[in-house]
Amino acid sequence: MNSMKYIITFVMSFLLVSMTNYVAGSIAGVSFDLMGGVIASVVLAIVVLGITAILPDEEVADY
Image (cartoon, rainbow, N blue to C red; front, side):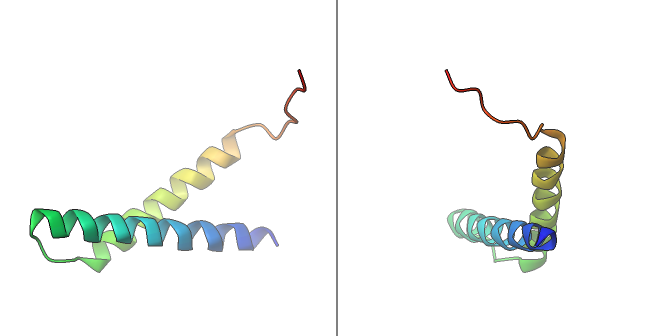
């Protein structure tokens, strides 16, 4: 079940980065580059997984 976290993180980052890449490229008038989106989504997924590994896994205090 732990590997599902990595798969979903990559898929969601791929969708979000590709959509942003397409919209920004369309506004700027340049062609859509899929490999740029794939590379950026891998970097984004690594950053997100790194942040989740650094943050503590404690319960939130109930005030």
